[in-house]
Image (cartoon, rainbow, N blue to C red; front, side, top):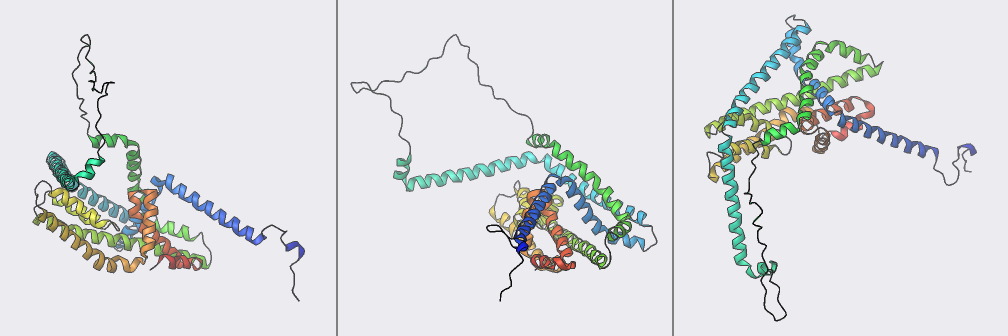
Length: 396
């Protein structure tokens, strides 16, 4: 005999059960919360990019602080020494690159002339191709041309001449004056983007202070963070925090080592090829090679531009592209899996979606931070029992 549900638990005719209604409400609430988070991340991107960048740098510099503390140096002093060394390293690196870039700006007219010559040559070749196509299919091209305008005819069939407008002798003749804009396109771009550049400079100025305070107060912050949890949840939070730090450190440090390796080899090769400004072109090509999916074509742009004034033959560009391609494939296929891939464990689909999402809301810096953020999310999911299915979804 079938047992029927109590009358008060039955749903009226034509209405959805309470369980289905509550599930739909929960799903709608989660979607609204997700959209709210995305909107906050987009409009507060300057703040969040600064905070995430400072956090990742803190994870990277933390082992150096612990190294100084082994010599009984207080954490505050050790953090100051590490931050000062890091800032000096960035300063001297930027100074060297700026010196090379200033020489490049001085030679910019030669590069502009060479680029104009290349564009004129390409246009001439296109015109030659058009002439060849015209000679092969003259009839089709002639039929495609619009008919010429003919003069109107009179009733007797004679064509009348269209009267041409005569200039008024009383009107003064003004010669055509060409107005030349002396403003630099780069200067106009900087002026147009002054507000965005000001926001970026303001946020970047906070990074050294954030990194220092995160390093010097890391023990206090860790205890305070773990104090938010009780019982077994505290150990889960500790493992998750440790996993996030390990993932970020492994990814950024591994990419930095690969970037240095590619930069050194690229610089040596560009010196052998006698390319101008190898100390600028080499590091740019090496680190651009690490950009996911589009790293190889990006790595070829700096040496190609540097080779424009001195090489006109196709063989030189073929050699440059071949060597840059070999270095890229060797680093990304042989070294990257051993240095980075074995620690991050993200599948290609998750990486692609992360690059699309964070690049859309945070721009170029989002492409750099996308993989560390997703790797940190996976580290949290791997340590929380209820989130482990999502960790397996992101993993390889």
